[in-house]
Length: 168
Picture 1 (cartoon, rainbow, N blue to C red):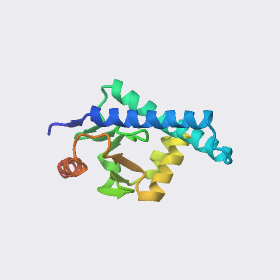
Picture 2 (picture 1 turned 90 degrees about the horizontal axis):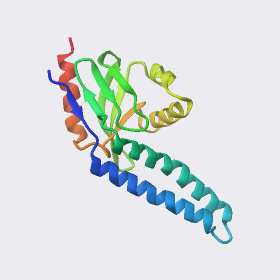
Picture 3 (picture 1 turned 180 degrees about the horizontal axis):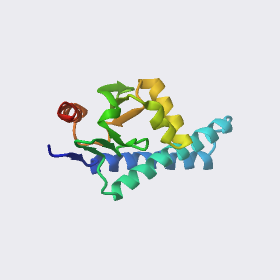
């Protein structure tokens, strides 16, 4: 079977970069022009937008300059590089199930692992914390977002099911 290689949508990633950069600029503006009477809230929102959306902007920028595939599906398994919380290579033997899910008007492909603790143990402390939070919110440690992919998640799920059926 021919491997399925999906590159990130440059348009979607570019829009993600532009949007997050605008929010970073808004955070800087809030720090320079505090809200009268509630400076602490302006400071908190300003720094939160700079830190969180700055990280999103850096990730999007790295995806714009990188030619690395977002997703590769082959006879060995799935290689996930689609988000800042990507799992990397996941062999078929570690995958219990996959399904398309919605959370707060966003679509994700949730990948159910037989040994999620092994993947959490390999992650950095920050990434581990965020992956655990994702798991508690949507039930999956591995979540592949639709936002950066040029193909529907249902198509991606179809490829996964086809390769899993063909697994030796």
